[in-house]
Length: 377
Ligand SMILES: [Mg+2]
Image 1 (tube, protein in one colour):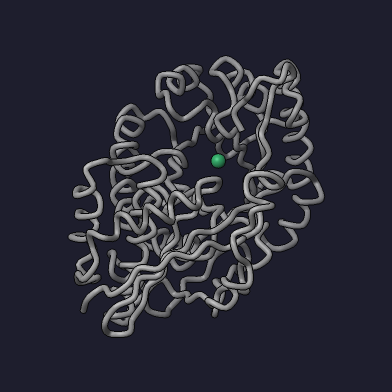
Image 2 (tube, helix red, strand yellow):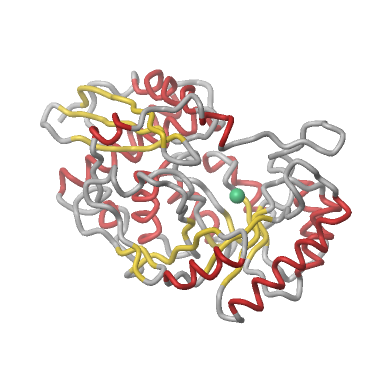
């Protein structure tokens, strides 16, 4: 079997624009992958074409050999754009390989260690919280900054967060898991004040307390000695991006993204490395349907899985899948079809092309401090 073509597709997905890849073969079997990287979609699509030159004409079932070619033969390593391109191609190679052998991918990477995959989604207010609980979810995540996005007054942030989480906790009672995503927006001193403010509200984890590029800043938060668990990882790439984070045990939960961190192949390795330090894995997964399907396959097979993110702000998410993934009572069912268990409808993709009007404007606004200086988003 040989790879004969690699096609990319950009599709408006809701808050994000999706980047899909389709690998075609000389035997008529195709595989789907996804490298969605919001605000950088066209760079990833081009990177997919650039790096896939190295696997053109080769046997797609030699997944690891091709992964190594993609990673090593490009000379430049790491980063979100190359990481997303390789991740997308890796997913598509696994999809093809599963179809060739007639098995779901999780059966080819060790077999399932669980019968269903627990999911959480997002809520920013009480109405959202009630809706999710009514749908059967037993876990949700909310933002760590609750003062107006364009008016960042740090003094109010810890107490405003305490008030918001306290109201949510009273609403759902003790059994629903609440997580907080701080989006890497705080300095260490502020992150410490935020966590101190919610320490008695039984938050499951506090995500990206500080920007991701400086582990010593994360160490300062860790040194504060909270019992609230810390999480990070959506903006780290390949196993080397996780090496020191895991070895220094700076968080309790890592959040690799199957769209950016090196695909199914690499996230398995990252999860295994985390297992040695008794760190759990809660994959970042706000992207499109192929990434979600690949994440479900991975989560079925890794022992130290905690919970999988799922986003609900994607109006065409189910339409573009010929047979959509299913969530029942807050858990993804394991697909039994070969490969990733989904197929995309190219007519639906074509009907929602990349949208210049929403790209980087309406859905992803900039955030500035009170004096107008740029702040992390
Ligand atoms: Mg996050």
